[in-house]
Amino acid sequence: MKKKLLLFSVVLTAAFSMFSCGDSNGSFAGAKEKTDGVLTYNVFSDHAEVAKCSREAVGDITVPDYIGSVPVTVVGREAFYKCFNVKSVTLPDTMMKIDISAFDSCSGLAAINMGDGVISIGAMAFNDCDDLANVVLPESVSEIDKMAFHECGSLSSVMFMNPQCTIFDQAITICNAYTDDDRKVEYKGVICGYKGSTAASYAESCGYRFVSLDGGNKNSTVMKGDANGDGAVNSSDASLVMLAYSAFSTGDESVLTAEQMDSADINSDGQVNSKDASIILSYYSYLSTGNDISVEDYLLLDI
Image (tube, rainbow, N blue to C red):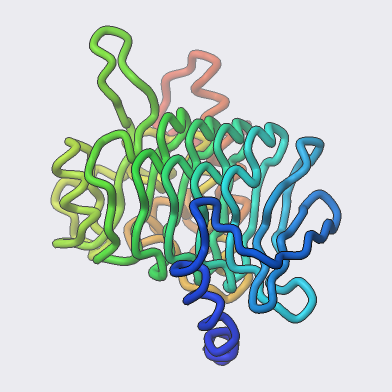
C-alpha cells in the first residue's frame, strides 16, 4: 500500500498528459529515445513509454518501473508487434496504458502480468496472441477496447477484478477463432467476474460461460485440476496455477476464488504451487496418449 501511495503522486501528472495530450500513437513532442537491452523507450520529462521491443527478443521480459527518474507508464502502439519468441511479459505497477496493438501477433506470448496500475487496454492490444492462456485484469483496469483479446486461440479464462470495467460489447473483444461455416467468433473459455458486474453482462450478451468470483456459482461444475472452470484439465489450468503461485510468492492478492483454489490444489496438500501445476500437466499428457481416466483415479496410479 505504501508503495502504491508513493507511486500515485509521481504518476498523476504523467497520467493527465498521457490520456489528454498525446496523439493517436501515444507520442509527445520532445521525447528522447533510450535503448536498454531489447527494449527501446521514448523518455519524456514526466514519464516514459515502451516504444519498441527487438524482434530478436526471446523468453521472459520484465519492464522496469522507472527509466532514470521518470515512471514507465505506457506500452506504446505496436511496441511488441510480432515478437514471436517472447514468452512472458511482466509490467510494473507504474504502467497505466497498453496501447493499440501493443502485443499484436505475439504468437508465443503465454503469460502477461499487468501489475496493479493498468487503466486502459487498447484495441487489438493482444490480437492473435495464440499461446496466451489465462488473463487476470487487475482492479485498476477500467476499460478494454474492441478486439483486445481477438483470435487468441489458447485463451481459456479472462478474469475481471473491476466489476465496473467498460468492455467493448461485442464477441470480437474476447474470442478464440472464427467458425469455418458462418465466420462467427467462438470462445470456449470462461469469463470470470463478480455477480452483477459488467463482465457478467458481457458474458451473457456474447453467450459465453460466466464463473462468479463471489462463490456459490450455481452453474459451476469445477473438478479437481480444472482451475479455470472450463470443464477440462489441461495446460491452461497449469498456467493459471503458476500465475496464482507467483502471486502468493510475492505477497499479492490471490487471483483465484476459494472454489478455484480447491480445484487448483490437485494433490490436496493445502497449498497451490508448482507441484500442482506439474501434476496437472502430467495428467493432461496422460490423457493425450489416449487414456481415459478421472483425475481422482489418476492420482492413485503409481506413475
